[in-house]
Amino acid sequence: MKWLSTARDLKRRKARERHGLFVAEGVRTVEELARSPLVIEAVLCTARAAAEDRSVAVVNTLGDRGVPRFEVSETEFESAADTEHPQGLLAIARQPRRALDALPVRATLRLLVLDAIQDPGNVGTLVRTAAGLGADAALALPGTVDLWNAKVVRSAVGAQFHFPVAEVELPELEAYLERHQIALWAADAQGTPIASVRAPARLAVAVGNEGAGLSATLRARCSTVVSLPMSPAVESFNVAVAAGIILYALRP
View 1 (cartoon, rainbow, N blue to C red):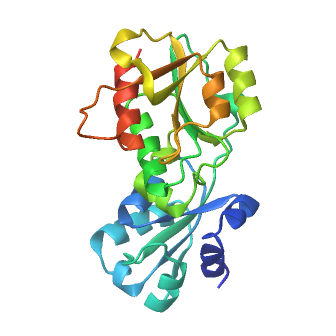
View 2: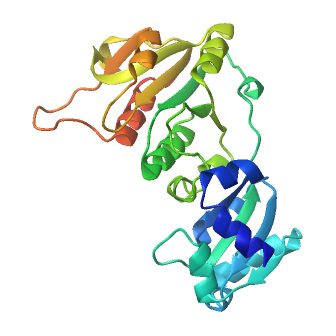
């Protein structure tokens, strides 16, 4: 079956980039996808999922939009699933094309920049946190896990279906920030305490790799580096927790 083979293939980043597609797995994530404006190509489900009320409801909603449904065996589904205990429901959808220059530039602006964040769970949580705290977009620099990785999509609970996310190169980001007079700050344990700074109206905040922190290249381009107060008993915050606190503290 074409769509089963496609779902299997989409486990690979290169396949997702080549096809411009991604997989949303699990009832809650597919429900979020169904509420979004994204183009959905197909739904795969098992007989077990097809008998459960929530799965039936979302499949019927997608069917009303003309999205074809294909029933597969449990074994076939497991070959395409990304989870250890799959719920038997996944959808294949088209990635939205979100160019950096297409982002609306307002008088007040907040961007979250991900610098080589490698854990998909962290990236998903960062995207959802940025969306929840009213940021305007999340931008991933090279070295960051694919924003349409299935675990990222699940961890974000589909936030990127509605919230702008994009992968950018550093020169592209720098040119964009300069063109629109957006300051670039970063978070690091050695920075200035966040309570002692005042954020500009337009601001991009960068957070770094889980183990290595910010790259030297990006840190050198940041006009300000901020830190969070922390008990000496704790070495560091999880990057998604830190980003959430910082975005809240620096909100317009």
